[in-house]
Image (cartoon, rainbow, N blue to C red; front, side, top):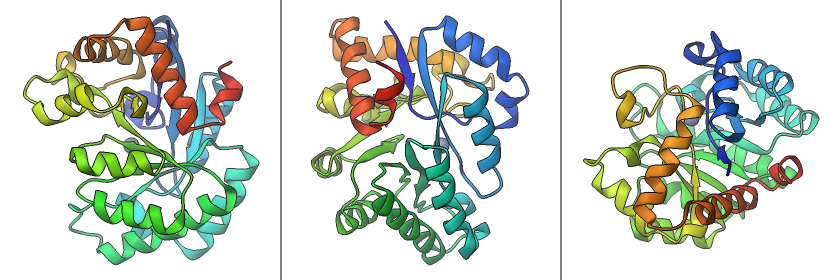
Length: 260
Ligand SMILES: [Zn+2]
């Protein structure tokens, strides 16, 4: 039984400095694949290098809202070319964040919408950071007729989830479901249609409860996180593993070629 980590920042120093061990630990913990998204024009090359070095890793390329003020007009053209050249599985990590004081929403929106156009042109799914911005993101996804993808670290309402599922999106859950106090996210993970869910670590962040004050999180933790998910759903582990794998490939169809 294997698991796919649909969101992990392996290029972050906390993981990159011991990446050989992180990959070995992942393989030992039945991790079949790791999707590594870029976040800015500056880390695109690191992410590409990681995906070339390790068979376990697939790449998504995009500019995260945190870094949207660093994106220049010519970066979008380069992004398009790199997505094609490296056969990226998605445009990501892209999105909008309500709680960024230093980056105005219109700067974030410009970068996000340009990347939606790229996803539309290249017929690629997207991997989305949507903190506090689900309704606006849903509106843009609908307008641009984007072909699905993953809303990572989903923390919206059941109603928002339903809208996104109708638009062909999967919702990502990770370490947060391991905290009993995270009642809302747990309830989402427990009650949303299982066909709409994928798992992720978001490592080195989003530590599971057993690593709460011990950094960093890593993809190998997904095995234990998945056990908690199975308990929440009360279904057979093999059924869940097969379903999540199918969901992940539906969200990111290019992964299907790697994991047959
Ligand atoms: Zn991320």
